[in-house]
Image (cartoon, rainbow, N blue to C red; front, top):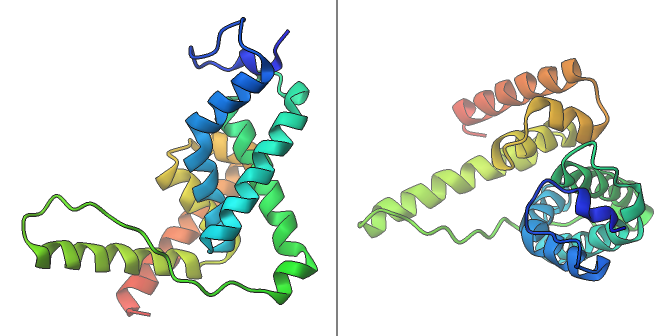
Length: 183
């Protein structure tokens, strides 16, 4: 029996091997896991390495996925825990990353100036988000960028629902103050 076949996505078939299913999971969720890792370490190359580690762990721990939660939530939980462990490691503390966010945004405006203003505003927002303490940053990312429900975030981060609600409220206030203050 293939453990990963419990996913609610119809892409999986009983005839797929575990390796094929894992490849499909990486295709379906690779970018999401990468972006989540990036929110923790703020450096693309390191985030890519951590994301690969996450999928390796998921493959090794596939038998622990019981289908009680969405596969995406289970992967995010592995990613969040792995990234937190990495951040706590001595290696990370001695090699803090300093790269700026490099996002290429395709604009819908016809004006080059409008595109530049849009990118600058978006980058400013990202900078403010990345200045937030980790516990607020991860909630903002999971809620707004990954569109998880508060309950899914609670399950992913192993925190009470009321704690997640409080963190989201506090994160919004911190962002609002930072943007108004032009920090």
